[in-house]
Amino acid sequence: MIPYGRQSISPEDIDAVTRVLRSDFLTQGPEVPAFEAALAAVCEVPYAVAMNSATSALHVACLALNVGPGDLVWTVPNTFAASANCARLCGAEVDFVDIDPDSWNMSPAELARKLVLAESAGRLPKVIIPVHFGGLSCDMASIHRIAKNYGVRIIEDASHAIGAVYDGGPVGSCQYSDICVFSFHPVKIVTCAEGGAALTRQADLNARMQRLRTHGIVRDQGLMDRTSEGPWFYQQIELGLNYRLTDLQAALGLSQLARLDAFVTQRHQIAERYSYELKGLPLQLPLVEYAGRSALHLYVVLLKGNWASQRARVFSQLRESGIGVNVHYIPVHYHPYYEALGFRRGQFPVSEDYYSRALSLPMYPDLSHEEQAKVIAQMHAILAE
Ligand SMILES: *Cc1c(COP(=O)(O)O)cnc(C)c1O
Image 1 (tube, rainbow, N blue to C red):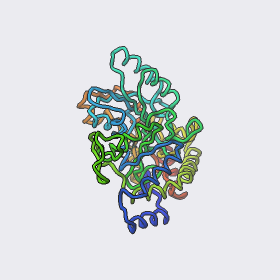
Image 2 (image 1 turned 90 degrees about the vertical axis):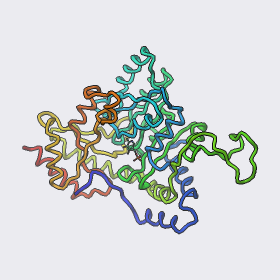
Image 3 (image 1 turned 60 degrees about the vertical axis):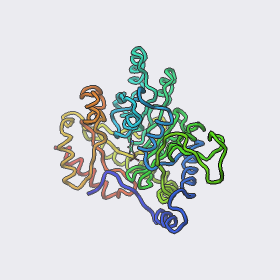
């Protein structure tokens, strides 16, 4: 089966990990700060806090922005559940902003409309979490301009988008947000096996996220309420977690990061061929450039016309021919957990229509020319009927 996504591991990656295994530190050693410094440099941002997943990083980002019971957080339905779960884990309520039918990202027009209603109802969100779907940046300049009028804070869920460019700068620079989160799961652009990071320009958020990642513990005298009792001394000043990345994972991530540009370039070459070879078919193809370049985590096509109702059949035919297509995403509000909170089908029509027609085709740097030819030939064979 040709998968829809997979990691690309080099001999250098393997060496980097085995070097750590032979070293003094498997965790809390020098690799994590080195990885954080490299991430910050790539993203042109002062601070990066590495964690053991993007889910953890989203949770910590919400905690650092003081999201708690009584607060409201908005994200989009077209995402992985973690973008919404992070708010629920803080005890906050969640609501959704529908997506734009072309970019499949949070619609700024819909955000503006919903904020007007929320303000008159006295129920504004504390935080919004736009998601850079498939690696394509949201219209962050508009989202930031709209949110700022209401004092709403912004966390970018950039799990798909390390290596993307928006408005002349790297995604992750936090030009239009408070915090930006990446995932380093193996299907994403670069991997730590499991891993994530939260980036920010704000020193106070950086310090807060660093201590929330490690139990809420500090060693800095300025943050303690009594004089140090000796070199062993530390204090827990708030409730935190163990969300640390290991040095093994950081070494893998650091080694992978050296190939970030190559990975994104390879993904664009694959996308270009798909876009050229599939353009005559009854499909809506993805945007790969919008005020910059997508990182192209996913290559999603939408079935059009008479094919719109045939997704299940097309999906099965592709799987039967050895092509591991997938669907991203089942709208978050369809899940029983969210239905139990009162969400209903029909509430977010653009995300729902998108979902009913979406197929993620194989997209990863090591996808061979022959494998891609097979995917293209099967798409033609199925959709020519
Ligand atoms: C993968 C993903 C996450 C979660 O990432 P993990 O590192 O697996 O926790 C969150 N949000 C989005 C949009 C994702 O695709």
